[in-house]
Length: 427
Image 1 (cartoon, rainbow, N blue to C red):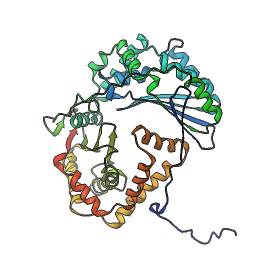
Image 2: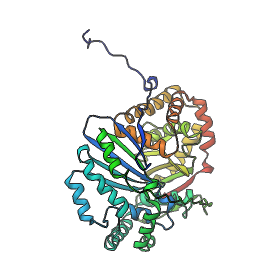
Image 3: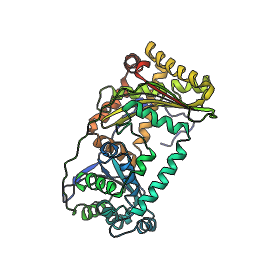
């Protein structure tokens, strides 16, 4: 029957849809290394991730994790930095290395047909990097220059200070870059961190895109034949000391006309039962363009171009932070309005229309996150690296769909009290 274009199709809220997390394949390579892969998509493009527990949490010397990530592909026992870069460029591929709070990841983007040619190069980087002294000196020079430039920006300073307040300046999640820490790095520091935290025994490998059986075999031919030597993973414990003052006002530029505002508190990670409900409350509060904070402080008061709140979950904890930039003359008024919006959420339940809008926004975004192999694999990576299963995904969907305004109000009364929050205002 032909489509009648004179009839408006039915409109459905995102909350009405069923959500399915497509399954992935999980297998062990010949030497036991875990490989997770997904064959999906129509383009001949492949994304491969190698994930190591080698983030800032494992540093025994400040700045070393980022230095290793920056210099990992800058020379091996058989290739120079120029040769490595030239090879990736020749194949039109890209290898990114990023050190996060908990993990360091290597991400390769390439056409599937070039995967067999590039996997030996990545293997070489992961097993034979040498961190040449000349490359380290250049890195230190550039890193210090970037730091000095960034320290002039109130936003950069505010981001540093709020994490230091929340977790403690000596804690990996609260530690921030200092010139002295960068200058103190030695080549041996990088080699030690590399050897202790990048053994292949600890890697998790994820492949997604148009994956063929021959691609899986190519991975096994290179990484599945590698000798695996397990090393005990050192576990660290860090205190979170109470700062001298919960509210800090910092003058970074006497002539500055803009203030960077960060207001935050510690918050549990994904394993806590309040995490999924808090995603909904945070969205309502400041997690999207139509949020309470945006409607009041941007649209009504005109104090800022944008204001957001976000939840940052890590393996060993997390935080809830409000971040914005406002005119210097209205900075304190902006802070007051943020606390006013917290009080509103504590004192009154959200309206049904507003809550439905928030739920549709959250679930509508999730539909986009499940469109395409790279996005689907990102969902699975988050679950697997945090020791969670797909049941956790479906539990969160149910929370997003069914949570009530009264439940959100109770949550606000638990987590949105001013006395739990730290403040940083930097001009």
